[in-house]
Amino acid sequence: MYYRLSICTLISFFVVSGCSNDKSIQIAENTFIHDSKVYKLIDNELVEVADMNSKKIRKLEILKPEPKSLGNASLSYIKEGAEAKVQGLYRGNKLYFKIKLEGINDLKENYTPGKFDIDFEDSLGFIIHTTEILTSDLTGIIGYDDKISHYLYNGKTEMSTEINSSIASITIGSTVKRKNKSVYGY
Image (tube, rainbow, N blue to C red; front, side, top):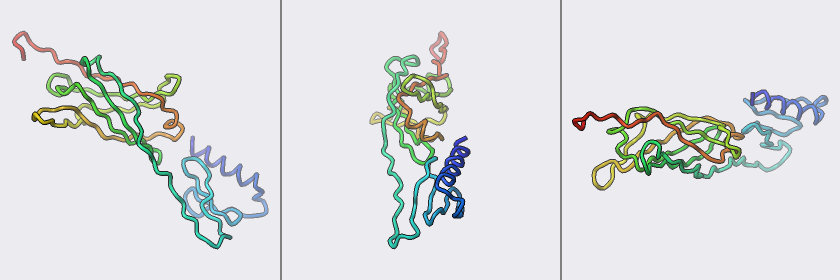
């Protein structure tokens, strides 16, 4: 869908600028020459990369992404006081994220295997993207007492720039449940 929108934007640009007298040439994927200028589609936006009539070479600078906190989510429905903290960095149609689970250091011993679903929501509370993390993919971090202090997960998920810029909050759901213990304590 975005590819079609990009092509339509590009065609509209060339038609409006009067390409009937001048030829437009595609020189690479999403890169075109028109009226002695080089254009490239970057994140669904047409960007002028170079002017072939210019005597100096202009360097195209890629935006440097900034890490941001995507929020904290309570996991008290699994264990009282448990919490997840999520940080992210958006780069080239992918959101790289880190999730830190605290207060649930006995996750793999006392809880059933399952998954965590991170729901990314917009300012109106609509879920605009979801990603899944299996408990088997979590890494336990050992504390000073040689016991697990918290769990970490580093992951990535593909999403458009529009979705990334619309993220206002997160919620986390899970299929993890406390294991049933027998009357004998095991």
